Image (cartoon, rainbow over the protein chains, first blue to last red):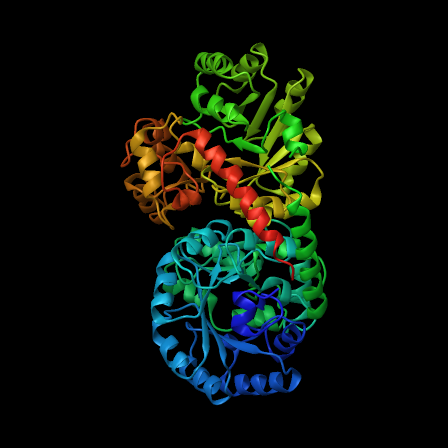
Length: 315
Length: 315
């Protein structure tokens, strides 16, 4: 099947691997691209020289299209974007910030630009800025998350109603069935994070991947809403945050408690007690660490089987 | 199409109208049942004598199956259940409480019992108690809501994985496309609340229905988490609650602020400032007040059209 998403990125399947901090290096991105999806290098956790190295390694590991995700809330954004342009990357996903600032520059250099949004306000801003497609990310997604708390089930049709741009669904998708559901709700494709965070090729620590596999329903929580809301696994660090919040900590006190490098500690170094273990609610449905290519095959097979089953439903 | 849900209730379409306080009287329930779905009288806001009156009126208004929803957190539960049995109601939905207490009694009297759950723990309890089916209600749903905050997109496959009971999806469903998405995620049918809360036959005040129609994304919020989490429209009453919470109000103080009859004031009396305006996130997708029969027809038509479209997707 070809649709607007596969055409836009020149890929086989409308499946994008989310560019996640501490998970999405060249190994994961190239594995997903080689399997027919779109791999994204997650620049959010990379210093500019590290990003350049990952881009070069990824070029060596695949001749298929891949892209880079740039969360606009981190430092190094300008340096990272310059490297992306120097390295002639043509697909850029921006997230966690105002699309107006960078979209034009990237488009002027011929990039396809996709912006991640969680509400109609930023969807409109992204469209006005000239974005080629949107990722609509629901409340259930891991990591940084919108303040409106609109879920994938509601957000997709809300965004579909207001724009004709190609639309990718994110948040809650870890199976072919969920992919099919996202398509039914108006998406043209999906962006999958958590499932690939726990893949063999993810740069995350094995302890972190195992914690994802062990997660059950209710294991994650959206927290630190006074700073930048983030979904993570409940652990000792989260309990500290929850206690501080119940004792009415100020944003400054929370910032101090959070400190620097919490996500690195949790995801990259595997410190399950003191680290920030960002992951989506869908962790409860991830039961095994698998190679990215196998994940891709299973998504496609399950999608096709489920679509066939649904055709037998006529009311 | 016949499936496990249509067979269980002896109805034409696997669509249940949620039994909502101050909305779901005999008028709404009979209209939905007459249109081929399953109408539910919402006993949560009814004194026992009022419930009996609604049951009798509903019997007079339809010869199709209908049921009663009993939220187990309100008073009058025992009296209401006795009336349900005296009036020979054979379909009972229980919610907001422990299914162990009432399921056996209802089953012993020959009732089909369905329990509304928001997590695996209560799904297991309901199954053990002998429930005939489950409603899995996601975080986006209006009114009282689970503490795990698991969304419909994640909750449905999580519950589908752990039980083979017939499964109804609730939360975020206000279209045939959303119904199809729920089926893709493992549901056998849907329970629709908000869309019917804003129907012509809903007992809610016109001002409340208009507020639902006017809602956009981000208009609702899950609040009062220290008491019993509830999703409602942001209004002056909610702002009071938010202020009290930010000033670290105790549960007792919040209870006092909430007072008695807030939902009645908002939903039934149309006091948009001081009332509790319970509704789901999907309000952002409800643009018109319509008759229940028209809603039913549109759900079915859109479901069928969308299912046909999806069959053209093969990856």
